[in-house]
Length: 349
Image (cartoon, rainbow, N blue to C red; front, side, top):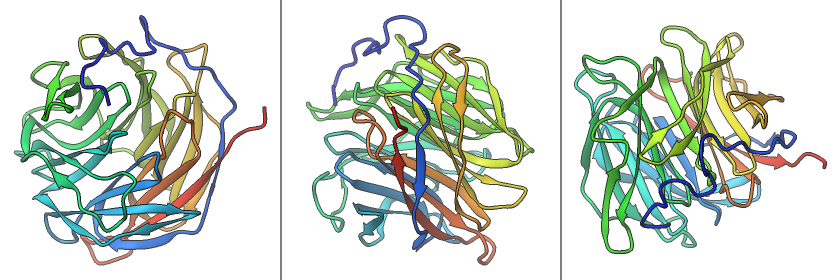
């Protein structure tokens, strides 16, 4: 992870970088496994095969995390461990050298909610019973709730969230760690002291690749309609978002992962017949607004909440994906956490 950004250009020179449009890969999802109890889960993967998962406890505000390791088509999970915070909507990202960025909300809804982050360190080649070594205390950085955070190998951090009391819509932030190598784990927010409004919606999720391209997905307020936005991070902490595009009419709570070769993997819950659906696609190479979604898989046919998806790194292209979701056929306010491993089948050349 570079401590300093190179004006966010990396592989992007000016304007929106267009990825090549390879044929969309198909994902073969394997057996669904229960791994814990809880709600509002989040997941991140490291190229070594480490999986980090955070969630909120059933019926309370304690936040927990688990360390897992990919073993074939399953994840070998370690024990649940308490995160050093209470709250809602945890989310997580991890750098190549094992620095962990943990973000959460103090409120479940916009009413008086504040966003916090902490930074920790974990041994990426280590075992699944290790703990994150927390390097900072919680630091407030904005008003809002229900956030999503992602990082790339250029050191770019992108974050999106819903508004707080008195506001409306969706906001983004762009930043970088001040100096990881020098022990300064604070985030410098290049986008400014407050979030930048970019759309109206709920349940936002964002992904970034090493070309500084981003894909953001969200749900329309009060309706089961999903939209995406493509964009690119420019100098000055600006995300050049293109127009919002609707891509599903009967779905909710989307999440997304983005690879360097332009492949996209989206996951959501579906309204008409319930269940969890995974939707791969590619960034369209000639139209910077479009994603070409092509093939749908259904990892689970039970009613689920907040499915999330991650892949095992962007630099080497897609290989393995892990999806996680909470099954809601449990007492009100509780969830049973499940996951599945997806083997990403590259299309024939």
